[in-house]
Length: 369
Image: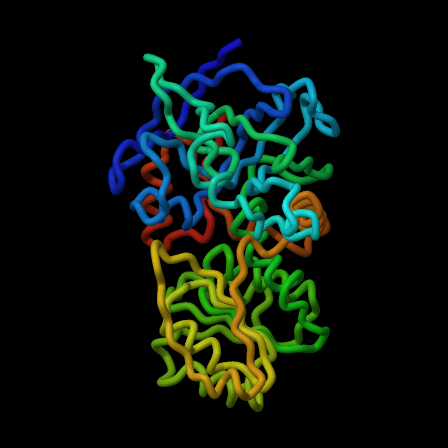
C-alpha cells in the first residue's frame, strides 16, 4: 500500500524548501513507518540546503524527528504500532566501530546518512509522476509527515516525555550532552567552558550540571542567549566582544584555566580561543560543522603542555542507549528541553528557518497536526 505524505522538498541549493506531496511506498521487512509529530531544525540541515553537504536533489532533509510508529515491517522486533519514538542517525550496527559501541564512527556513516537513498540505491520517496525524491537523510528525512526508518535508528521514548518536542534529542542535543557525558566525562567539581550557545552548547551546559561541574562558563556574542544560559546553570556568561582576550579572561577567572572546553562553532578563531582557555592538562572538544574542508592551525605549545584537542560526531554515543537516558533526565527535570525549544507549525517552515538563521531561537521545532 502506498501513502502520500506532506514534505518540505529542496529542489535547488540555496532556494527555499517547498511543502509538496510525496509518495511513500510499501515497507520492506526491516523498515518502520513513523508519523512525525515534531522535527527540529539543525545547523546540518541548513548546511546541506546551502550545498555544503552533498545530497542529490530533489531531496527531503530533516534529521531530528520524533513521532508515533504507524506500521512495522515483518522482521522488526521490539517496536510496535503506537509507540512514541525519537529517530537518530543511521549506522550499519555490524562494522568494528558499531560493534564496540561507537556507531557515530560507523565505517558506512556517509552512505547511510548522506546518500539520499536506501543502502541498495533505491528511494523511499517519489513525486506524483513516479520520479525519485531523495530521502533517507540521516536514515529518516523527517521534514515530512511520514518517515521510513529502520530499527537501527528508531528508539522508543520512555513514558512522560512530550513526543512533539523530543526530536532534537536525536542529533543536536545528543551531540552537546554526549560530548560532555560520554567523551569529556568531567569529574564532579571540575570546570568547563562552552563556546557557542546554540542548541548544542545549551545541551552541553545542561549536561555539565548533570555531571556536577562547579564552574560552567558560557561564551556567545548573542545577548539573547545569555539569560537562558544563566537559567540553565552557567556560573558566568560572556560575549567575546566584551573582553580583549577570551582565553586570558577565562584563565584569570578560574585561576589558571578550565579543565574542559566545548567548542560548537567550528571556526579557527573560536577553536584557538577554546584551547587558550584550558588549564594544563585540559581537553577541548570541537563539534561545529563547516561545509567542505575546514583547515585550522593551533599553537603546538598548547599540546606540548598536556592539552588535547579532539573532534566529536553525534556525541560519540549509541542512540539506543543514550537517547533514553537523555529523555529520562528530561522527564526528571534535569535536562529541560522545553526551555530551549520554540515550536512552529509545519506550514510556517519559512518563518522557522528565518528565526533560526537570525539567531532568534535556540532550537526551532516544526510540529505536525
